[in-house]
Image (cartoon, rainbow over all chains, first blue to last red; front, side, top):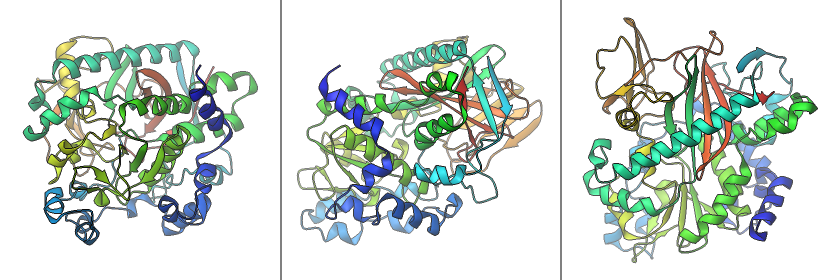
Length: 98
Length: 375
């Protein structure tokens, strides 16, 4: 087996998703979304609610271009219009998983 | 041989579930989506049977994709997106889960969840933890091999870099969904181990730059999504999918596999195949059948007609056209519950099993996962 496959698999065997997530750096926006590391994030979600039925999607959040889209200097107005927003079809549906 | 037994649960299973990040087990109505008061015991021969049937069914599905790639209207893929779906066939398949029924006449394909298959945390770390705690040493290691194989996932993610124009991978969960948020943690973990630059993006925050590239703060080369293709293909911005060559995992052609039309097409292409259930575009004068919307997730909007009796689930997919699948006995293992065997494919190989059951005849996304081991 090639080395590029062996090393990741060793890492997989010795870590958990929790450990990997808690190693994020401060400037990683991905981690800032649930500061406090993985366990902080779990607690946050748990206190928020561990009841999945309360997490229904809100159509108003996804059916249009958000302000951040149109104010993004990298995006022309025409592109923002053309984008039309992804996510609108989620309205009223509770989950994406099969 | 597959049997279902009553056992003593671990008293601390909820705390242990949280330790592996499995945090959506509470359905909020005094029921749980994890049940270790029971277990399934699977013989090694049965596991081999599940493996060979699963890989065969996957090949049959791939045959359908190739044969019907120029006939996508049957799957009700929007006309303006059919070229996009066809072109995506060059992109690789990452992961899917067959739902199988174990009946008196063998394993039968209920459906193929091959767009955004869920239950990853339960099927990997939660199962392994349960086996570590509960399965005797004699059977432990052969049982570990029946869990959804994370090594296969990571290996595939390493291999698929050759299909991507760059190393930036973003994970897109379904909005406002704790289950998908948790899956995103797992997917980011696998992708990081595989060596990708990983981020997470909400679907509403997916941007397009002047060159047509998808962006968050950087250009996105690969998207690992839990947002369904049947939605993306119908979005207002769907045409923008043509503007770049972003690699999607799973790719757009998997919208053929997750579409319930597949069930009717498979029966047409492989009539009377022992691992298929008769399925049609009308009820074909069947007296016992299951009516399924062509797009439906989590057991929503299912209607079972059995000798005049009707059992149905509510949901949000009722507007779509239906297919009609013959009702098979899903209570063959234990008449107390309806059992679905989730059988995983990663890339093109069998990758493990997950049992889910319900006291009703409709297995839903909050029906309990039940642990298993291999005897």
